[in-house]
Amino acid sequence: MKQNIAIVMGGYSSEVEISLKSGEVAYNALKNTDFTPYKIHILKEKWVLVDDKKEEFLINKDDFTAMVAGKKITFSCVFNAIHGTPGEDGKLLAYFELINLPHTSAPFYQMAITFNKRDCLSIVKPYGIKTAISYYLDLGEEIDTKAIVKKVGLPCFVKPNNAGSSYGISKVYKEELLVAAIEKAYKEDSQILIEEFLDGREMSVGVIEYQGKIKVLPITEIISENDFFDYEAKYEGKSNEVTPANITAIVEKRVQTVAKLAYKSLHMSGFSRSEYILINDEPHFLEMNTVPGLTDASLLPQQSIAAGISLEALFSNAIHMALK
Image (cartoon, rainbow, N blue to C red):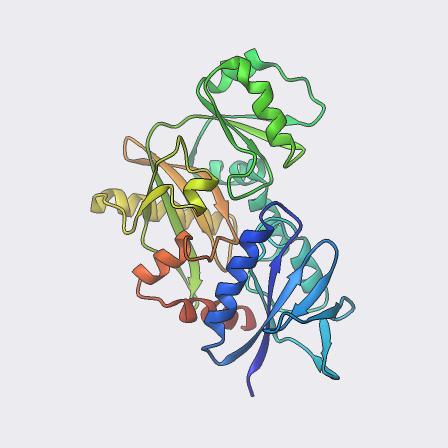
């Protein structure tokens, strides 16, 4: 008998529409496996099971089940496709762990740490992983633009500390534009990360747990048509993504080693995709995405296919690893 798999998608952040697309990709792929997938929309206003006719059935939050046509639907595992809160920051996963329902992501604490950019950076630095110079701000703190420029220089990046898909990010060239960029970032989060601009080649590296072992997927070089790898570049074709990246074997090995070390130092499991900038062929870690995009435009599926792993195999493996 096939095991029922709940594919959670949606979420409470600006990434809700992207997450719904990722969840749809996972659903269609898992239909061709030994599992029976169900689409579960986790939204601020409702938690519902959505069938192929788009009919909705309420999720019972006591045990994460649903009544469909008089039959109680229970799940063996949850496939996490929620970008942002509450799927990528650990909140929903803590609930699943409380009710003993396996899920495909890392434990909730690891997810919370990686979602918080400043905390994530603070963990990888002691392992010798190079990062950009950073300046932190919390909502309500004084904005000292001169101090910011003195520490990180110009241009610099202003980012929400807890957000994804490049929402709220600005590349700032002039000190007088910093306040507007910070206000834009505060619309996404109450914590701000301001980083120096690293002028180098951008690499994206998927690291996953595959068949019980940590596997580094083929590296992607991102060549954005825009000023940086923003929302348009990520999801609207405004970038050239080269997989595998055109780098030497020595540099490839260097990036793979750092990517694997970051994954292990953060005690990760399941999916991850991290971003690096190459400066003099040395990878500098930017951030880690623990629920990377799964749409046709997303990098992890491209890297998986380049590694000879179909989406069906990729997603099925994540469930098998969770069930073990």
